[in-house]
Length: 325
Image (cartoon, rainbow, N blue to C red; front, side):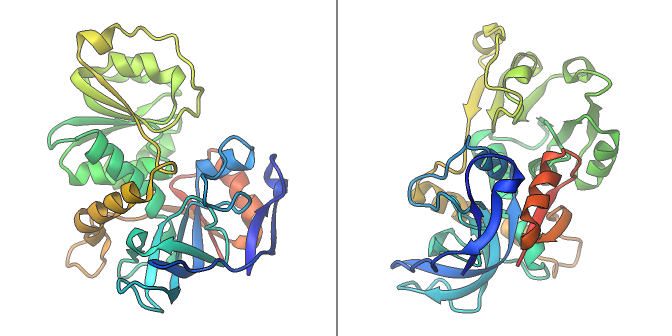
């Protein structure tokens, strides 16, 4: 089968299309014919040599989320050949086929294309886990979402709004903030004009942050007593000299989370919870507009995987970049 192959660590030029063996189907697993795959920041980090695939996943085939059709099943009644599915993997999604445990796959919601479906798993599962499981966001609370125009940001804004929260978001682009209003943003903060700590008029209950070190101190300063800071990454750097006093005085929680390193049992539990509570909200057959929608910046052919990486690295995207076979 064809697959995107990493020839080494470096820029987009290390990505190419090559031939690799078709993955075997273990008991309890399914093999999916991939139609589309989402591109994520983790893919960029892996390509640069900073985020290797966990054990058991292809080391040289990137891709963390897929959408496609079941091509083979083994010792499971959950799926049958031809079913439309989507989901997360530890790597290997940018290939014509990928094998996944049957309990980790999700049905593609009615009315969605494969490209739209491929834009759901990573950002919506991550946002749901961060807001609901880790952040324990409740109706009426204020949540601050950094980089609200990103794929994760637009997903988190939609989920938070559905949960009844007041949604605040940051971006260095006024245009992205204006576009995010459609996806649940209540108050946008243009950090190219004013630091978010100065712009906030009242503290927040939950923060979703992937900036890391540079924002850490200000994040602590704008949380209410017993507020929750959920760290999803540290794209701005992993070090900080922040005052830790607010954590003790205000009984704050600093919660780290990552999806790729979780065990099979952890992933299965999250998928089951998401499937019950969130997946029906994507169904476009319901009378009113579906509460949750994947947000696509663009879709490119898999042969242009290097261009997809360059586009995401430009930081000019709003929502997701997806590649298709």
